Length: 293
Ligand SMILES: NC(=O)c1ccc[n+]([C@@H]2O[C@H](COP(=O)([O-])OP(=O)(O)OC[C@H]3O[C@@H](n4cnc5c(N)ncnc54)[C@H](OP(=O)(O)O)[C@@H]3O)[C@@H](O)[C@H]2O)c1
Image 1 (cartoon, rainbow, N blue to C red):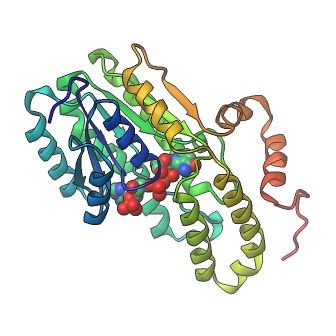
Image 2 (cartoon, rainbow, N blue to C red):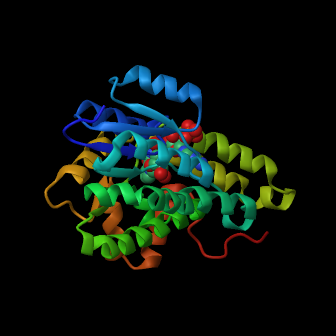
Image 3 (tube, protein in one colour):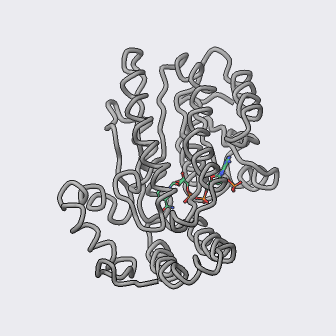
């Protein structure tokens, strides 16, 4: 049912930040179309929301499913278009670059980068109709890289570039494009990090295990402990609401524990100083060349 605030589409709404955004926007009077990949997640989300929220099945890597979701929303909103598209779906692939499987790296970029662009292209006609907004969920990892997070950070750097380009390209039509860049949000992705990290270790060849296992485990331990103490996803949902409703939204909203200092550190510190800080944070050996294997 259309609401005075208009309609928004939120991707990846089964859990974490996407779910929090979908429920917050629903609770603040938007007509929310929330995309999930499983029917059970659609039912759980609908049970937690108002009758206005419409769950849709969509996988951002499946162009036919993206097109079908866009058709469903077009049929539902008619000539009104949509007030916002929140590109949130994504995940993180942990591991050392030396050992990342090319297929896994392709999948990371396919979901986090190509998928967001495919969704944006499919829903842009509806955004144009309503002079709506596009909100991309990036990451502080789009400004600062962490060891063993190279694949995920690469995808988030790419989203920074795509968001910047789109913001300038859609400027002539009065369409705002905003990046919300979270850091340290406690979501189910934290458990996935631990699980996926362990699963990756199990696939490493003996040499790879000998070289990286202990360091990577220390990284996982520290990263998981830090994320578990992170901010609740509701803080991101509030930033997304601001991005969608502020008269003139900022181009970028860093949000969550330490997001602002982490965004600025790469500008303030020379790269090798920043490396030393990151070695310390994630337990990597600080001395250059100290390993002989
Ligand atoms: N948590 C943080 O600290 C943090 C920090 C910076 C940025 N972010 C970003 O915030 C976004 C949400 O992360 P989160 O922490 O809320 O993680 P999450 O709880 O794991 O949620 C990720 C969502 O993305 C969906 N998704 C994954 N692959 C998909 C695909 N191929 N097609 C459609 N949906 C897909 C998941 O669906 P399924 O349930 O079906 O897998 C889920 O709904 C991500 O873009 C992430 O990079 C998170």
